[in-house]
Picture 1 (cartoon, rainbow, N blue to C red):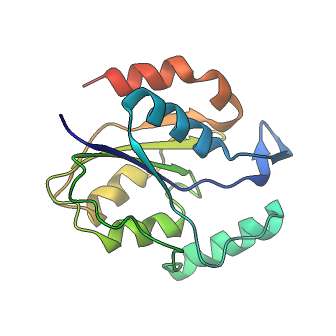
Picture 2 (spheres, helix red, strand yellow; picture 1 turned 90 degrees about the vertical axis):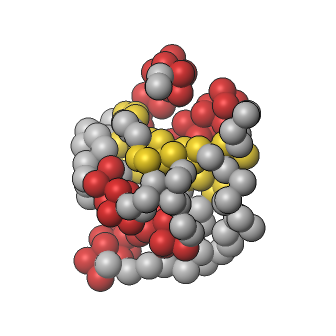
Length: 170
């Protein structure tokens, strides 16, 4: 039996949801990550920056875009001790301008994902997976990157069946 990890980046506080700014107690990607972990009996790891983006949505957007323009690699608070024990990694993130937040790039560059299966999932407000699958493939050339799941952020709490079907698909 293979061991599974759900590694995800998620942001609570002010978020853009269904055309409005809403204050979220738990980020949309974390809600999806919890559902996947429940379905797969996976370990969980939250990717967090040492210097997190602002709780204010507009300031966060400015900071995150600046990091993306600079191709920055924000320092993370911690990493899993090891990933060699995991065969499958569900990788979750919100879609930030057609790809992953730069902290996810930091996470992926920290480990060798050779011979791992990466199953990406993202939350978005209309832009789907963007180019994130190709970005993961570039960062983890020796991993098997499977078909991703794009979940509309405003609908994440009603997406259990879509998540379950995706997790069960081969």
